[in-house]
Image (cartoon, rainbow, N blue to C red; front, top):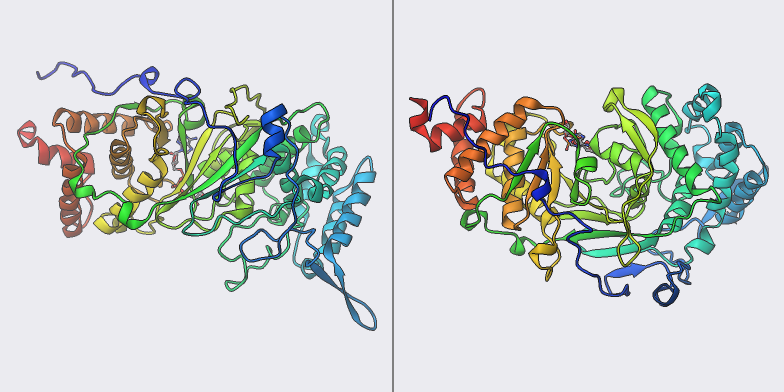
Length: 521
Ligand code: AR6
């Protein structure tokens, strides 16, 4: 009745499922054709030890080109002639020199990095790194002593990861499991810019379809944002190079690709909307702990984390730097693909956002581990479309693309009973840097979640009016028992109407007018 507060259909946070409570015991860790593991699996099964799996680097288009591969050369220009030397000789010489110091200056780092990247001697700037160390407050200035330890870790790469790392290429579903120490070693190499063939900006370059991995882009062009990024990253390296730190777990990176013919026929979906918890308070990574947490990704995973970007994905990657290593081997995501990361550790906390972002100090991650010694943290990277014009998104082609993308990210592994599937923690995916309509995108995510029968915790990130509007929209659709198929059809009508008007009608208003015309009287 009028005037009375209607009861909402939204649920409470505690009704949603989370790991480890809803975790189904894993099969013993094992290699497969599509799962490459970088530790000795037998030893892991017997004694839980994380010893690197022996192997050989492979200089091939399907594998990460490692800096210690014998095929990797640099050209040294002499007075009389040019000579080619094995690049790792130079890299390990430079890293070992740094490792022998008790304190290393930024000038030492710059000199070393340029020795084995002679092509970039005049192009790469280290201004930001210089300014960062100079301006650091005394109590935080451990940088010069941590740099030699990082160099030592980096130079141990052939021992930590002797085996070739397959690239997670377009169109393939496959996984990689690395130990946290192996990831630390790879990231130390990224810091010292040792990865070959990864620096060219040329659109025809071998790795043009991969994100950058060497950290050189973080070292130039000083800004306050860069300072905060470097604080977070140095904290990570400080922690992982500390003798007393035991990085004792594994992390799995899984690229998943769903063929077009296996995508749902949205028009005929009979599911109704799942449970929804919605709030303007809190954020995905805290209140959503234990759920599948959505990374509002770029199709180049990690987006601008090594450059100037500093929104949801970049912040997530800075707080959990192990995620950054995915840039080494994940090819640009296609429309029907996503990347899952299980087991990454959170090392830092933050406050603020974008221009006001600040590193807020160490984070103690005490979430439990699964049988494969991975932390119970599941993240899925799904990239929304980037709309330069808001209007572009009111089109069923684009809407179907977004539905399929969310479906790919939300679909659980086959054969897991539904009681053992954690729910989804998300928010305004695609609606910040990518300019999407938050109500349309919320609906799209709810439809995809309905299709896979998972409930949703939705964080509007301080947006109180969005919380209210989404709640009303959800209540309307649940009270009318609207199915996903019906909603898909309604969205088609909405797009048709929107195309005819100069400024789009608000989706929640339009739905109310369409589904409950009498309430407008
Ligand atoms: N929890 C909940 N909501 C959040 C959080 C959080 N931790 N952080 C931000 N939001 P955006 P996009 C809200 O712009 O539009 C990156 O560069 C906040 O309201 O990060 O998909 C990627 O690499 C924010 O406005 O996602 C891509 O290149 C909204 O979520 C690109 O941005 C959207 O966050 C993706 O942009």
